[in-house]
Amino acid sequence: MDTVHINWEESVIRFSNIKDSNNSKLDGKGFYAILGAIYNAEKNNWGNIKLLYIGQAFGQTLRERIQQEHPAYECVFDYQKKYPNVGIVVMLGIIEKSTVEKLTQQLFDDIECCLVFRNQPLCNTSCKESYSGRDLKVINTGHPYPLKEECPCSKT
Image 1 (spheres, rainbow, N blue to C red):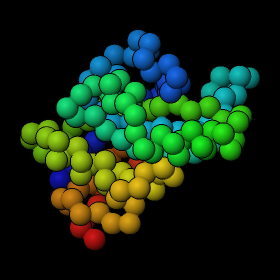
Image 2: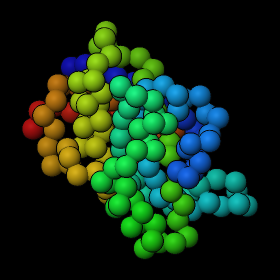
Image 3: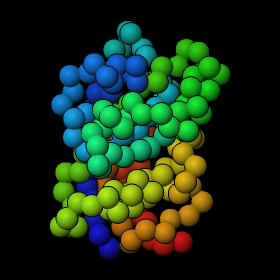
Image 4: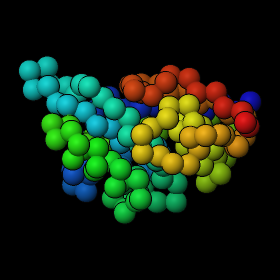
């Protein structure tokens, strides 16, 4: 079974600020999770977190990918309309280490599918019912909440 470690950043970025954010991780490839959350100014953090969507960028930067039109974004913004006090934020994950020597689009697709299958985000449609990629264990490090720390996936 291949193992991939993804390090998730502690800080999140408001979806509306992706274009102008100075976070350098946005200018590379990796994974992202779109969350619905409520900002607590007193504690200076986000709470009541709901996982809405998991995505990835391989052939383009995270910044480019996140800003592109996507059918799932309708679901994301419908969630925000339903809960107007919720902000839409993005957390970024970068592969830290992997037993797979070469990072490929297929590996990124398998990782994304495994994360979706194990975490069941509200707005993803593919990979929620089954997983058909390589035998894979995704270990989420850093600040992965609300993602599970370990996501083992085998063909179902």
